Length: 242
Image 1 (cartoon, rainbow, N blue to C red):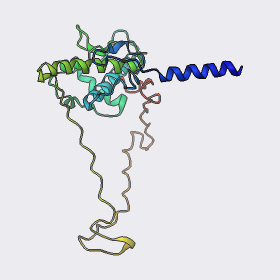
Image 2: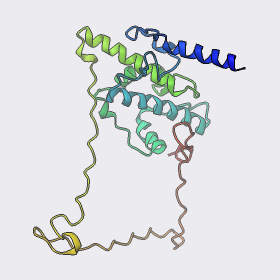
Image 3: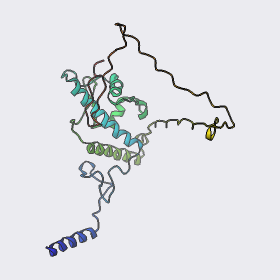
Image 4: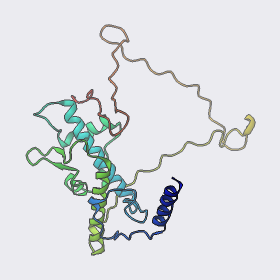
């Protein structure tokens, strides 16, 4: 038993000592990658991602889930998707954040579709957005599509096509509030130099809601959207009908 164990240990050590198989990362078949965390020499598939690539990855996945969730929640074969003019509305209802088309630095939605192709496209007849993959597509697939698109853009840039270079508008960092007591009262509550501190605010009461027709304040609360714990969950259908 000890001999077999020693033999296995020697084989493992010999294998570890072997030089790692070289991988041609430049001409890598992205869609055939098995482990996105190690495509060769310990390098992840997303090693060269920039801010723009991460934004496109997120946009691919979010729009994919939004379209599939809308179709499932509405459950109407005559309305599998929504009109483009309503994208911002449903994006906000499902994700609780605003749809910012200006951040992509493109003029038309068709230009954005070119950046997230093979994930989201437009119906030829209705012009409504549609998800190109099934609902159970994993995140690795979106990562591969994003890297494949990045490599295509890089080849165009290397060939002298500057129109392929992405310049997204990054959101501004939130302004932090001034530290308590700055310019007013110093440590220990003593008054320091500078402008006097503003009068303390003890909070204002929230205004009461307008009474209902019955004269009471017992209006029903709006249904809360359920996100199912993240991207993998199906949003609620509470907001699907305007």
